[in-house]
Length: 446
Image 1 (spheres, one colour):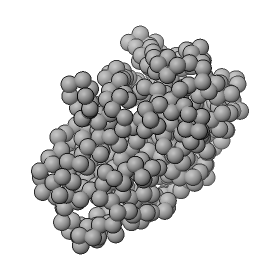
Image 2 (cartoon, rainbow, N blue to C red):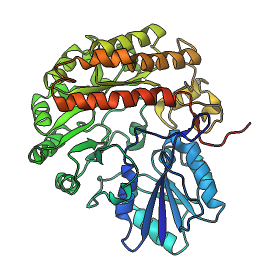
Image 3 (cartoon, one colour):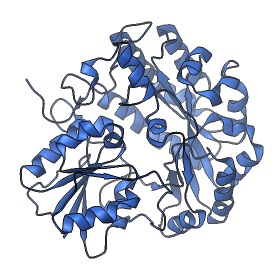
């Protein structure tokens, strides 16, 4: 038997399929490959950088689907199904809205695949694939190291993806992770994480956890075990980490370079509306104390903002940009607030009749990447789209990259950190302009 794993692209630019130059390993597909019995052949095709050979013989196609890649995933599935090849879809999008994905596949898998994938393979071998497989949220990769040989030759960034935990204890209104995991946070066996890191060759690790520090005690156990490995690593974490000094010290000793930090907003009313509780204590003072602590520990910050909440204005978006420039963040993301399906935000906007594109922006032929998909409260959708793009453009301008480099606490703290800054800022600048306004999927109605 042969199984083909597919990582879909987002869509296309004017004349060609978008090639993601900042692509990283599709960790979830490496886990699926590891869960597959050794007598089953497994191949991976990454639509972000290579052509999918639809006519190549295979017995089952498994596609991981995010909301932004749903339209393209449905196109890929249709190509295989018309050739008589069964397709199963899983991931965040089919779990959040299974009724959207189900018509486009022979089977869907909702929840964490670790606990049902063996049944999927057995059913496929017998030609009895069920229309739906439902898994509970459970412990991360129990006894299953990621299979990484399938990533070779794909041109991924030279950073190894590893997962320690899943979920987050917070309940932000807009967050698809909270909707998926229901405020649960589950951790992996620390020894299994360490062994997986030791088994691969790179010294730069990205922990893909939604909030690596949601459980401080568990994180400390991990960091103590990482210290002897002499690695460098980055992850995603909430701002309240700065309240635990032991956590911060262990984090740095274990090789942490920095984090994606969800500031989300500099406006307390917006934070209250989105229920971003860990940020409220310090947002009113401009996050001065946590930023000071992060910089004193030498941590490079990827500041993440969501813009378009009901308390946001065009002026507050400009002030958010000024805030990011003032603090010389290593990177920053100025994301338009997105109504992901079946999140509390989506349901509220739907009840208020504020959703655009018929409520299904992810498959609408007129929707464009990084465009607003709802009617904001204090500006038009077009104004929100333009304001967010302007913030991204200015933050990633050549002059901004030059000025932000001169932070001796973080970006110029060492030659290694400076090299990371100089390597990735031009790449993210290029992606900012390349992806703006991109069509989702490859085929479009005229």
